[in-house]
Length: 210
Length: 313
Image (tube, rainbow over all chains, first blue to last red; front, side, top):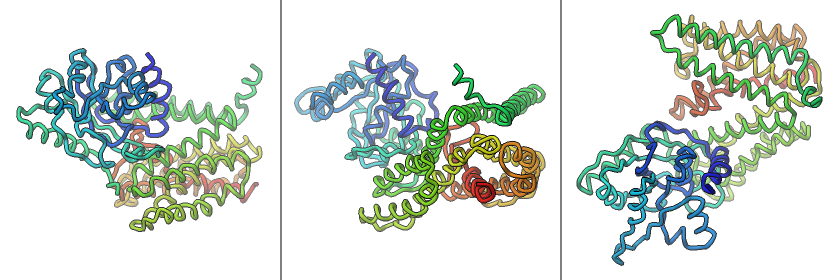
């Protein structure tokens, strides 16, 4: 409830003024869970933009996977992350300790959530792609029935790049792809996902930001 | 209740507002009839355009009649959206992120000068002070690669989307003659937008010879001349009704306003072609972005304002 109100009263008006977006192929977004929405990651705004694409009735089921060590570190941020965003904590570097870092994501998918997942792991250089990590491949193999919908985001890395405090208004583009076909092997799978992002980026005209 | 009633425009302003609604209703009926008469052809773009016109005309009319504060906030927001669209289109440098934040602050300031009726500041703030502030802020950052292009494009955007469009706001507060400031703005916007539609329609019907094929292949001499002639008639009859312009002055305005609208339109087209996009955005269904809709106004607003101010204020 708090989350729905927060999006209706704070996030949506804020995004409307500061960014405003051009969504292409909105109809390709999943209309029910479980589903994985995977996007390139350049800005803290990525998460809320993706979440605000879903109708309020679906919003409680839309949950982003986020690094536990960053978002659950301090009190206020942890409260914000848990109650207003509803993150699924992912423990970075937990594999070595014998933990399954993606257990939370799997559980959420079994509860028919729409999970927002950034396969590049962390926010990269603004408006550039980073290497896709293998987490998404393991998730895909574990949940063969869950559709994976790639989304390309552009402009948010300019509006609020890593390390910046004040957002600068920029329109941003959100291009949604058809669900991904899965390759059985890791390398082709990751290459296929990367190709999807690149194909989406090629749909627009984006001057390089340097 | 009385206060609300007092806000309802009377006289010329009311009749012209009603006339605009009538025009839109006629366009709606035409779209419906065309779609019925020729089911094989696709009129969805035409109808999407008309629907967007209803929305834009509704918001605009409300904004100019409710109160001066509402009008200024509305026009300021329009400038802001156009500027944001422009900055999102052009290549900007990473180093200029903070410069852009300063530049955005110029929007509320420019409209503040209008609110306090400080003409001297209004007219030099962007051409002089922002012209100096932008390079100074960039120099402090120290990035010299692409400096000229960055200062040039940023200031050009500020001139186009904020300076020129804010002239519409200044029209609002010119002392009441004719139908008052709201009448002046309504006149300017109605003529400019009507002229866009007239040129488009004439071009669609009879267009053959291209005016500026490399910039905008859809612009033809037939469309341009037909549009100017149609708008000329509109201006000739409407100007003395809504503005202090005399019949003779209206003859001049009737010629240069449609021409300026055309030139503003193709100038923005040239920029889009330079960048390599078709529409400046996707905000308004059937129309493209904000810049696509206000491109003609960026030329007509300041020209009409100064023509009027020189002659009558």
